[in-house]
Length: 177
Image 1 (tube, rainbow, N blue to C red):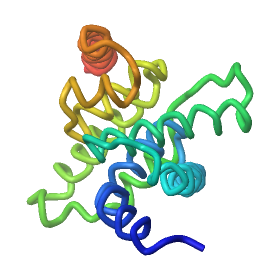
Image 2 (cartoon, one colour):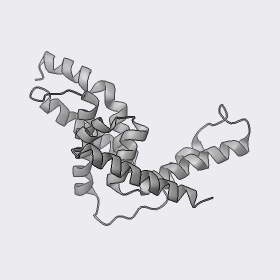
Image 3 (spheres, rainbow, N blue to C red):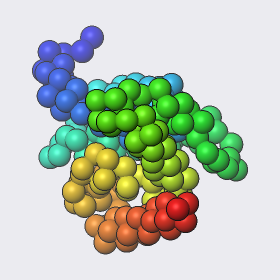
């Protein structure tokens, strides 16, 4: 049985950040179903530690749990030597989106969808350590300090990984033109 105070803490500390947790898990696992499993496991872990943890930044705390849960899940469920190619699911998602409200004509709509798919594929192709800092910073908007707390690395390491990741993205996306 979960105490009422723990339920309240969960509602305050975890629930507001579930979208960010899912987004990070989606980027780390590479698909929606696996991300849902990771977030569910992470929420169970978060709930179990709420009464004993000292939480200064709930969002960074939850994303650290999601990150660690994703790595554990990946180690258990994926072979070590998986090589990523173009993500067909991302291409299907981009093609299925309704861009008519944003693009005045079909050509611009297709270009925007292709650009988004290319960016998603480029991020997905990054090494995991680089991918996670890009997602945490540029997708979820965490500060360097929050990312450092979430991944358990010095702030300088976060900045270095982010710079290298962005350089790889620029190289990859720049070479396709």
